[in-house]
Image (cartoon, rainbow, N blue to C red; front, side, top):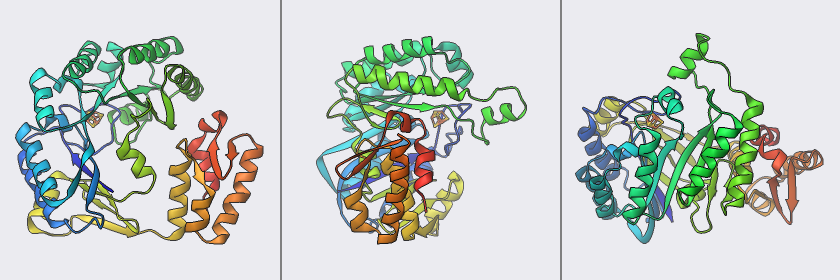
Length: 374
Ligand code: SF4
């Protein structure tokens, strides 16, 4: 089965750390939704496997879509594809959007998984992040969604800001656990150049992230969430049994997907392509039926490196049988040599033909994957 990703590039306000593609002007929202519907039509041959297992509305802030706009997109998808009856349909939302009325709309649209961007329970930190909601609103929004019958809820948490300390992080994790959500995605704050935070960092108004503290917080999270029944199935993702993100898990396994909307990426097994990250240009070019994306065909080396990077971050790890079946013998040899060294260093563990990160290795996931690159 394939997946569909739809990028909704609008936000109420710009969070100080975020470098995703979005606009805070909502003026072109309706035109953009129409362009996404047109793109769906124009690229209807992109996926070879017409059966759809997951639909994911990401952003930006997809909860800014009106019911009619959400319906327009979904109606077109159902018309063009064979969407599985039990498809996972996720919508990213911000707590301040989740009113009773909005939740009813999302039910009518048959959204069955909500990804709620809580980020923090610390009011000062939320103000510093320039989030559009308070911690109280966050907690209330999760409860409202649960009362409306949304069982499959994931929340996002960020750690590592200047407000972080181990004590407050433990209490954040406990609050998240008490909310009884089924899934938690948690990211170490990074300072991206083209963000408000990046700008302030450059001006020396903000300090660098304390990596040692971030590592302690990461390990605390693995321990605390693990004891509460969450399975650490990807470096930044924890899910209760039966509640892993199907869309993202498929992506990590190399399933094909089409991405619609500005900046969205697509993958057909051979090549990757990505849409222009500019709302007005996207709308114009889709209307012209013109090139609105760039494309690259992946070489075997690129596919190999990508597999190292993605597979190593998951609890399933790197599968030697998969490597042997899909890559040249020289690349497999290169992997085995690197893996032997990393195993001796205690960063990788081997079980049957699967290579996974150890607790120690999880702290250095990207560096270890980089070590295995060719
Ligand atoms: S973090 Fe989310 S809500 Fe904030 S600017 Fe980025 S996409 Fe928008």
